[in-house]
Length: 202
Image (tube, rainbow, N blue to C red):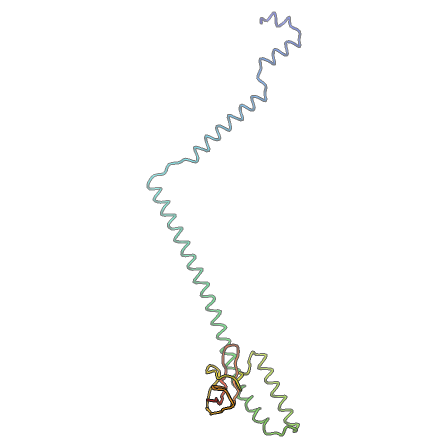
């Protein structure tokens, strides 16, 4: 179409012709964006692939080995520390229990003497009643400290808790049964403070 013909066209037709000859801006933007995405994909692909020398590979393997050894050393150290902590706590508890037991043992002799003194009074004597209250108070204090009397009379003989100082033939008692207690024994938890001194039937 010649310039003369374009001039002769109405103004509206001229606008339409110009629009047909130009590319819409939206299409240009989409084309540019697609081009950018392709470029970015190429760059990413280029970043994913790289080349290393043999020396660099050996260095990386050495570093990986060092990291693995350091991790193993750390785990061993953590396990050793945990064992040390448990062992120390157990030793501390054992030391406390031993000191507690050493403190309580002399009071057991006092308890024996109170029982002997108790036997010197008649059952109706008011002094006996006072002595019984003192004995009960001492037993309560020992109980609060975790000390208990070892059951012995009419019980099967237990060499880990009873000390047999006499044997007797007794048809009325079962074999290897404690028939008499000469001195009461005491236990604190699993620790025997004093063995029961007993007579055992054969």
